[in-house]
Amino acid sequence: MEAVCPHRLGLDGRCHGNDDPEYPCATAALRVASPQLAGCVANLGMQLAALSCWVVFVGMMSSSTLWGNISDQYGRKTGLKISVLWTLYYGILSAFAPVYSWILVLRGLVGFGIGGVPQSVTLYAEFLPMKARAKCILLIEVFWAIGTVFEVILAVFVMPSLGWRWLLLLSAVPLLLFAVLCFWLPESARYDVLSGNQEKAIATLKRIATENGAPMPLGKLIISRQEDRGKMRDLFTPHFKWTTLLLWFIWFSNAFSYYGLVLLTTELFQAGDVCSISSRKKAVEAKCSLACEYLSEEDYMDLLWTTLSEFPGVLVTLWIIDRLGRKKTMALCFTIFSFCSLLLFICVGRNMLTLLLFIARAFISGGFQAAYVYTPEVYPTATRALGLGTCSGMARVGALITPFIAQVMLESSVYLTLAVYSGCCLLAAVASCFLPIETKGRGLQESSHREWGQEMVGRGTHITGVTRSNSGSQE
Image 1: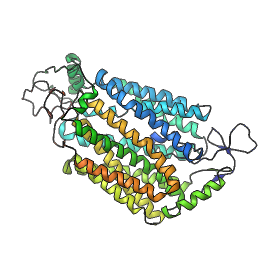
Image 2 (image 1 turned 120 degrees about the vertical axis):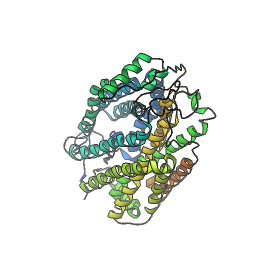
Image 3 (image 1 turned 30 degrees about the vertical axis):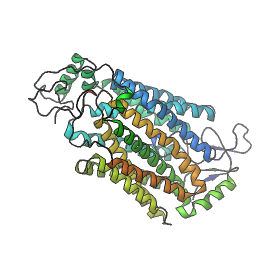
Image 4 (image 1 turned 60 degrees about the vertical axis):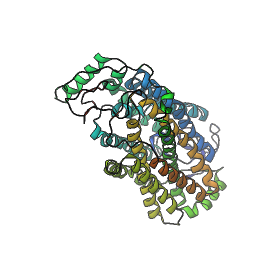
């Protein structure tokens, strides 16, 4: 049974008596399902709940391209470090927001910082050898799932007793840890080569060799300096134009469907099944001026189970991505998600509902992970961070729209809502198949002025403009 508190909801995240004049009357349903949605803990009506999520994604969308440009111009480590410190600062401040309007402003600024977090994948990919690149990038995505599970568990213990302020404050602790440790990170040797910092690149390679107990590779490091890095026009050259446009739609569909499913999960669990969700919403509307509504313990446990689906999602993607290739992996993940969404049209029980949501979330998160592998591989070093940044920006457009589909449209028609998500993913599956380049077994391109797919093979071969090291330039 859900716990219903027939009082007023305060900014401390708790219910207050009707005689408390300090807090306006509002309905609240906790929406805690991922680190990015941690700002959506107060629901002032369905439209305001969507708005509280929306501002986070506005910040992410508006900054993703900027962080990509900074990372291409000034270094991957620089862009990542600034974005993390920015997110930490405004994440802590948002826990002390005095009124709801300040929550929106501060969570928007948090989203602005989160827009730079995908650049960690750019930095990481440029240190990885070709054969291990897909596996290592997918494994680092496990920490996304760990963070998601951590947030749900944290909400279970913190929200009932301490309220949303402590939830936001404790959610910033991992960022504080990273902010301390990020100064240990080396800059990408590939970036240093392209920016003309030969000595810095060699120092990084020597450090890698020392820490791995291995000798420096044979050969000479050749500088391939390119001044016009991080230019948007390079994403629309004849060679990359269709890749960029198709990737933008794929990333849009991934985020639109992923976050839509996160929000739908809470709605469906509270309703019990698809067929009863409309009648349940009418009942909620009838009492919304008097009550604030909490997720029950059963809701949280089922939410946790569906969140845990991201771990088998990683394992399945890890198993198929080097067998089927990046394009087919993304297409398969989108197709299965779409099929599971259609099955939700059937009036199934709670257990079957949980299973379908589990499978759907496993595969949509797997598609997201495959996109994170493919995108840094397909763009050259000169525009790799910008390419990933613009794709991340398009993903946030999808995330901006999805609260109004998963929460607002759902009030009108649950079947139309499910059809929108299913149809979008079917189109994304087709787009994945039409990507002009398959990056499986291909090397990273260094410069946008060179042939695609250059990467050193072996230790004894000399290739101009390629850093020959175990930082990602060898098989």
